[in-house]
Structures are given as C-alpha cells and as structure tokens.
Image 1: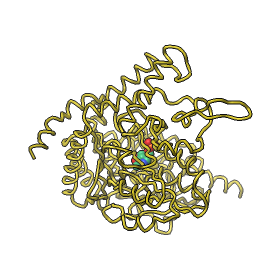
Image 2: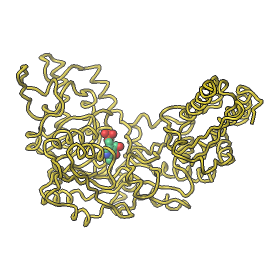
Image 3: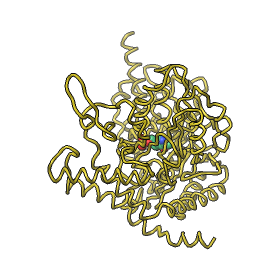
Image 4: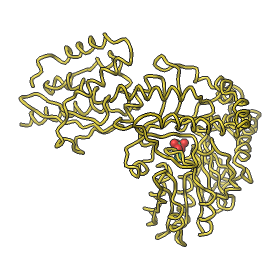
Length: 414
Length: 146
Ligand SMILES: Cc1ncc(COP(=O)(O)O)c(C=O)c1O
C-alpha cells in the first residue's frame, strides 16, 4: 500500500498534462476530457517539436545523399530504428521494418510470408477478439490459397478459451496471429503461452501489438514471437508511422513486399538484386519526419517511466471500473482478469451513439460503435459499446466527469 | 398530407424555436423529445431496403407518393438521430418532388446542427437528406414516364 502511494506521489500527472498542448483546449465550452487514446493518443510537445525541428532544420531524403542534410536526416531516421529495437528488445536493428502502422505490418506479412508459405488446406488461427486489421488480410489470403481460417473462441468475460486453442492446433496450422491487448475489451492475452504452443505445433506466430505496446513492457525475444506489429500514433508518436518486427531468418527468406527505390541493390532490365535487411522492405521514400519524431515519443515514455505509466493507467482502470459499475443499467463488456487501458460498456435501453453525442456536448471524447471488431460484437450479441480508454495524462477527475456525464445521458435519454 | 406551409416557412419556424434555447443541453433535450415523439414506423417498412447507409445507428426511411406529394416516414434505434429525422420530415414531407429537390435546408446550419451533417459523424443526417432527395427524384421520374 505504501509502495503504491509512493509511486502515485512520484507520478505527477499535472506535470505530464502540461506537456500535451491539446489538453488545454475546450470543447463546446467545456475543458476537453480525452478518453479516446486507444484510437490515437495525444502528442507531447517534444514530439511536436521534433516534427518542426526536422522540417525546419534538416529535411532531406535519406540514405542516398552525400551532403550534410541527408546525412543528418539519415542519422535521425536510423536512430529511431535503434530506439525501437531497444524499446521492444529485439536482438538486431535489421529486424525493425518501418511501416505506416499496424495494418500495413500485418498486410506485409500476409502478402509476403503468407503468399510464400500458405498452401491449399493449410490453417491459420486467429481469435474471436481480433481487430478487422488482423482478420481481413488472412481472409483474403485464405480465399486465394484455399486455406482455412480458424477462430479461438472466448468466454463471456472476454478471455480466450485456451483449451479450445490447443485443440485447434494441428500439423496443418501454419500461422497463429492474435491480438496482444484487445482494443474493444482490454483483455491482455497470454501471448507467450500461445507462441510456445504454436511453435510446438510448427506454426509461425504474429502478434498484433497495436494496443499492448503503450501499456505493457514488450520483449520480443522473451515472447519469442516471429512477427510483432504496432503503430506509433497509439504510443504518443505521430500518425502514419509504425513498426513491423520480424525474426531475421524469416525476413531474409521472405519475398519482397513492394518494389522501388531504396529496397534494391542493383537494377538492370534483366534482373534486380534486393537490398539487405531492413531496407529490403522499405521501398520508396519512407515517412521520414514521422519516424524521426517517433523517437521523441519513445524517449518521452522511457523518461516518464514505463512502469510508472502502467501503474497510473492500471489505477485509473480500476477506479473507472468501480465507478462505472455503480451506474444503474450499465454493464461492462470485457471483464477479463488481465486487462489494460480500456473500459467498454453498454447501458440498458440507450444507444451508444446517443451517449457519445451527449458526452461530446460536455467536452468528453469517448469512442462508440463496433471498434472495428464486428465479429466480437456479434459474439456478445450487441451492435457496439461505449469505450473509455486511458493514457498517461488522464486523471481520476476525468473519470468522475465521465460518470456524471453518463448520469446526465441517462436522465436525458430515458 | 398536403403540406400547405412552404419548406422555407417551416425552416424559419424551426430556427425561431431554436432561438429560444441558450444552451446545447436545451437544444438536445428538445431534439431528444422530438425523437421520442416521432410516430413509430410500421414494422413492415423496417426492411433492409429501407435502411439508410452510412449511419452508426440503424435508420429506416420509407417514402410514399400520394397526389403528387412525397410522404416520408422514418425510425431509428437512436433517439437523437430520430429527433433530427423528425425535423427533416416536418420540413420535407408532404411536398412535391420538385420542392424537395430544390430545398436548401439552411436551417440545419442556423440551428447549429452542422456537425451532424459532416461525413465523419456517420450518424446519417447527410445520408438521410440524400436519401430523401433520391426518393423525390425517383417519384418525379416515374411520373414523367407515365
Ligand atoms: C488491436 C488493433 N489492431 C490493429 C489496429 C490498426 O492500427 P492502425 O490503424 O494504426 O494500422 C488497431 C487500431 O485501432 C487496433 O486497436
């Protein structure tokens, strides 16, 4: 107890809030209460500054130029790669591929590794709580290859039924691709056990880390997963940049994704030889500015302390869950023992869209709808939820504002 | 069902009613109230064909043609959208296809509900207006063809 209080004390949320300029604004005349960080997080001043510094100080196309600006830009771009490698504990910088985001990372694997390795009759396993980004690429692949998509079911609390997963595994299983933390439920999945079991069955493992990277410590070597994808914009970084981690031996043997500049060694009309990792998968001019600024976001996280952030968010989630449950007619969707970052709920007789409009009129930003997880919503027999998600800058007072906003919504709408 | 008040006049009425409200809360309370009072749509018209696309909530819109005038009936599972639809019906229903096709519907902006017109809101006011005008066009073409 004392230890927790000490950490809470050391964690100065007001100081954090001052670093996020957008949090100063008002919406409909009320102070903004931003509870939609699972969709995208707000950006600290250091990230905004890094973008401005890049464009005003050393904007240049990277890797090829022999002039000072190009060298500075290249160094900054590659420095982010090193920072990412350390952030997720990859064994080598060659395993870090820059993408547009999680969605592109998953598609890259589906179009390269998938098209090379999946054959008719093979099986790909995903789970019932996947984001559409981790469903559609595999569906397309399965259709093309006459392969079979299998789905790990969940219980009413929103936890994977691991026994059912073990039963789905067979020599036909070629890939298991699961979400680490569910964006709709907050469930933290046991990805280490999943990876070990999948490997025992001879399958390759991909993890959708879109939501987990910001809340949990990620160690891809300890997890032993083969691929891990995430987005900078959910990690206090800019939009339009993301990362695909892949084990080197897989990335080396996979076919290329897109052809063009940067990813080549030599081009003649007869034949092209491809560049080494990681450049082989980074065709064309990449999103230099956003990748460069992403490092400022990673530094912000390490300086604030990932442990302290996680503790703060956990405390907020615990408090929010308790407060929300006291609202008559409210049901929490997703009551897994291991949760992170989001509280999803429905309120008897109220439509989520109406709730969101009333909350917006009070300056409160939440997300409503199916959260790009329609099959999951079907599993719960609902069309959508209202989701409040929590980040480093949120406070208990904001949760109190949400709760009183919901009381108001109930009063007005019923 | 012949609407004797012109579209513009009805729009003006609504703008005057909204001028009485000085807060967002009051405006929305009024819209919610309209939504609750909207005449329910008969179950037989709640078909997939009558669903309006582009809405986060489910919205059904049915249109009937009587004596040269278009009658709209609608329903939704979300009450604020229902209130907004109720205003559109009050303005447009009972008019001729031409009157509907020419309607500017400036009142939506004047009462401060433009956010609900944005594509991103996906709560259907824009899709709804489009759908109502589509119906008017269909009835007009049908009549011209005989
Ligand atoms: C679990 C999960 N997977 C994938 C994605 C897709 O991420 P992006 O849109 O950044 O590619 C998201 C984003 O909402 C997500 O929450």
